Amino acid sequence: MTQVIAVDWSGRAKGAAESIWLARVVAGRLVELDNGLDREAVVAALVDRGRREPRTVVGLDFSFSFPAWFCARQGWRSGREVWSAIGAQAEQLLADGEPPFWGRPGTVAQRLGDPFRQTEKDLERRPKSTFQIGGAGAVGTGSLRGMGHLAQLSAAGFTIWPFDEPGWPRVVEVYPRLCTPAGVVKSRHRSRRDHLHARFPEQDAVLLERAAGCEDAFDAAVSALAMAADLPSLIDLPRFAPGTPQLIEGCVWAPRERPAGRRPVE
Image (tube, rainbow, N blue to C red; front, side):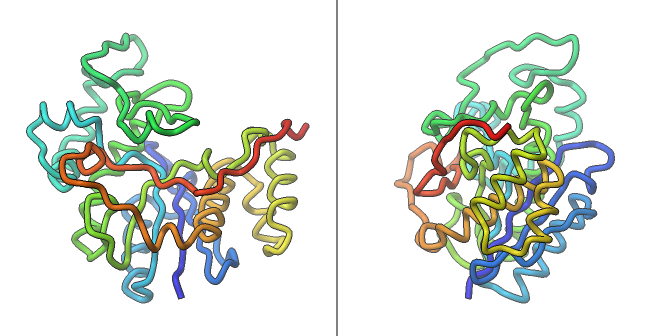
């Protein structure tokens, strides 16, 4: 039996444990939804879960790498080289905010190259650029404070898709918006709650109420449930030919059937 775990990550410098939520689904049932662990502790928990149940797939919602041109400019030739370097440099990069990174107050975006990875260009609902480290919807801070942990998971025996040949346990990059209909207004409790109870009536009502409690819990829960619903695609992950950008940039896993859009729930 394959267990699915989704983590709604946080790049906050302080209080990250409040914002990091872990959702676990076993046999199609949401069985766990909790926060309270900081980045180091949640990675340790994932390693422990993977050792107990090797047939585990973990979804993390931060960018696993950068556009290929930036990796080449830095001399990084593999995902592990990216993660090792960023694990050591993340805080300095965030403090400096030098181009191509942008978004800190008082700075101006300066494009040195294409800010998007190929996987982001391929998505209908495109995430923000990994280089954006401030401002609304920025994913760069969480990504920079996440990549180094991929090296820890890799060292613990996890395979990281698509950088590795898929093995067990495995890790994929997820984007929660791909698991949620466009009409759901995530900033509104009622909209989150109505969607959860309408879409997942068979799930534990107490856990659904917890998932509706905040956007972070909601993202973790819907990501884990979407992954579990499309488990065959996570078992048989695509492989990329040598030389394709995904092998250095990473790739967002997307459900094969996107949630249908609808009018926002008021």
